Image 1 (cartoon, rainbow over the protein chains, first blue to last red):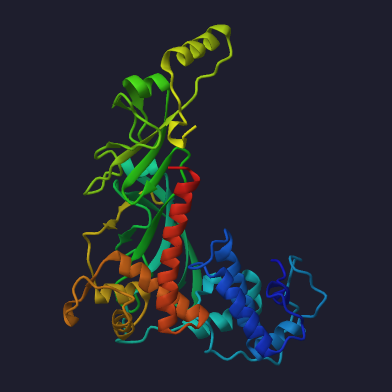
Image 2: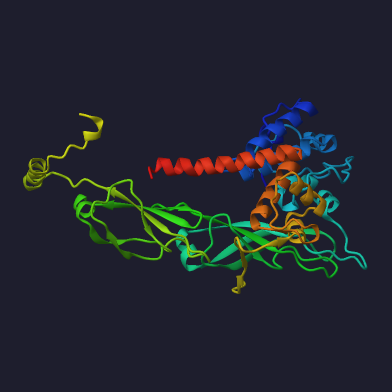
Length: 317
Length: 103
């Protein structure tokens, strides 16, 4: 288990007063809040900051933490000294409402059991029953999966109260069917897959939020899908029947004569196949064939002579 | 290792959630959800109190509101403003990606 330097995590001096600690926490929490931040490691940072604040804002915990001594370095292998917590008593209450599983092993080793029980150790009693908590998680899929449906294995880690009223962390893996027609941000509800209920109460539900991996060719907007499609000048000028890729496999498409870059061709119903299916928009991009050999150059020269085309006519030159 | 495949319910635009569903999913009280409705943070499909219905969009907004209020100590008006601004940022980012890709 690694030692955690809570002062360093919050960028504070060891001598910081409570007001400074609160200020530092508020600033960092706003910066790294997972609902606000665009930083890639926001969630991990936010948990780390929350844990550091949990300890430093509470004079009792802070004093206990400080007593571990300042010789520890962040990341160093840590074992709590034998009777390090003698003389400290941690009162329950006043903690943030985080899950026990949000805290690091380091945290649990110092504040562990007393903390876990004081926050969540609600004992099931006679006649008392309560529905289990709902859980939320994310599942990342590819755009193609939204067309065909897919099965994903999802690993979950959740705190649970066992028969003795102790909180234990349970790891489990679920195989979940991702229905076809999902779009970015939609949720799938799995009834009864949240926390177990207490005293005969029903289990909670699990909500999975669907996110798409960014795709190299397609851009997705709601149920519509956009594809940039390269065309040869003659295909665009004369019209052509060509093969166009779609997330469900290639289809044949007619390109009308006189197609320009910047126009938009619609393949109706070829977007994400939801109840109301989206469309696939093809955005033609006319590409330039190279003029490398003499024969190729001669062709361009012939075009120049025959076509008397001025691409800058609109600019008046 | 369980190989059973679970079939969930897709919460698309057609699925409506009850006030109780919403409270349970956000671990919050009905009063708090009703305050969000009064503040205009949530737009229920149906406003009549005992049978108020919501879409899954409200579920996500309510969860975000709860996190912001709890973690950052923002009051409800502040939460409402933050949610609106965050949604604007999302829309602008999507536009930026579109413009970057030039189509």
